[in-house]
Image 1 (tube, one colour):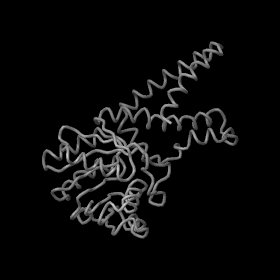
Image 2: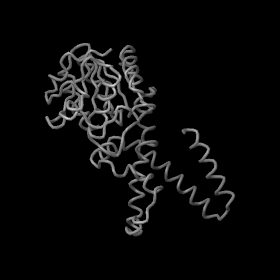
Image 3: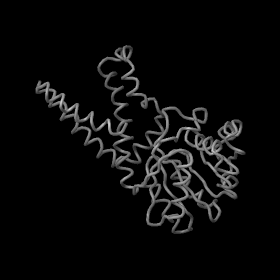
Image 4: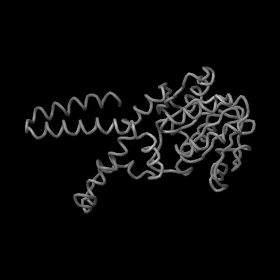
Length: 282
């Protein structure tokens, strides 16, 4: 049982964590910290949080688990303030989509003041944002990647794993570098491709969007996400994203060459090969 849970950033992910923790009775008290009263009020009104505050130090007082749920760039800048305000014995985790720089910053801060930090990335979300879109079941069956380092205390890792599993997630462990390479190709690249697909239609003829059916809408849904949030993710993970883009270009070139041959059997064989791999992930 968590005595007091603090969530910094009560948006889609932070709000969903609060709702899930409340629904499953995981914490004696839930506190949300935001930039303004307007940002924390919805979580309190909905009963997801017992109280909200704009004062980080006040929000962290007496907390045993803190989840940082702000955008990547904000989170990285915020870590020093969290470290300074947090009390001894706290465990800190996050929901950042990239891990290399955040974990390195936490390790540097921990060398100066020992606190427990465990990097987390729940592979869940929406193209929409804000507490109004939060759901108590957002993390059910979702993969949650934990990114410990040599500084991570086993007890802290175990507790963070238990928390994510308690809200319905399936926890797995990757080192920060591998995490960033993996998410570049299975998360960040698909978003960039969705953006490119919409842009391709605009380049051919914007009027063609008028006949876009469900397949196009489903494939490009994430292109409707927040540009500032994804600009931060693309920039922060640009080295791994570049590697993923190179692999994608090779795939496109290969499929284009197979189609250009006019060999129906070869095209179908490639599609079948890809289909079989896609079916393995459900």
